[in-house]
Image 1: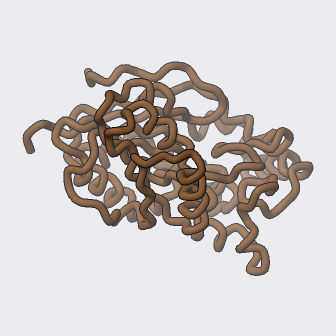
Image 2: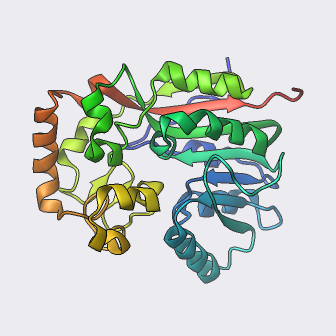
Image 3: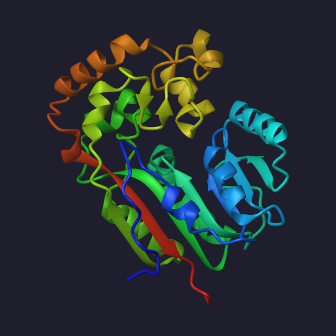
Length: 278
């Protein structure tokens, strides 16, 4: 059994609150796909002002800019935001004690997922741990589901199977991965937008990598790309108003023969440790 205990219960989407509460003063944390920095700002408070609390990564320039504005506003001197691909992060080996990532790995192309886990292993110090909150597939997704952009943005169609996720971690070199099913109900996707929410946050705050540059290019019309994830957008990528989202999601599910999203995927917490010696 991994020394990392299962998380506390959460609501609709994956949560990292348990991991953040377990951080120790003086530790360094990396948040992959940090968006505007919500998780890392919280983590930085836990590790103390003398520590390099957050070295965070996101592909989207606009998210990094937003995060830095917040950093300046709250005078968070122990945080650094870094723009770069999750498979090649411009930080040195053995940088962090803990790596966190929230609803991001499912958006990494299947061919690059192993590279992302290899990068996590490289960045962690010996004995360091990784804590991922994400959507994983319970069984092989159909080609129609995999190719559906709406479900990709909804954090479902890009999800790896649980067994694949474990294999990625072990191949990267991690010790004794622990994958916990949170039992959260993914059928809230069918009502997404009625209250402005999605798997990655509220409609007024598109701060996660669900709204990175790649997603803007894939899910939004050319003339809308720049405003896709601006404040006030109410769909997952800001391309439709929230009054139509739930209806569209239900139509989509029906067209794909999906009666229950929980049959296909679930919200999981993933923990693993880098061995003290390789």
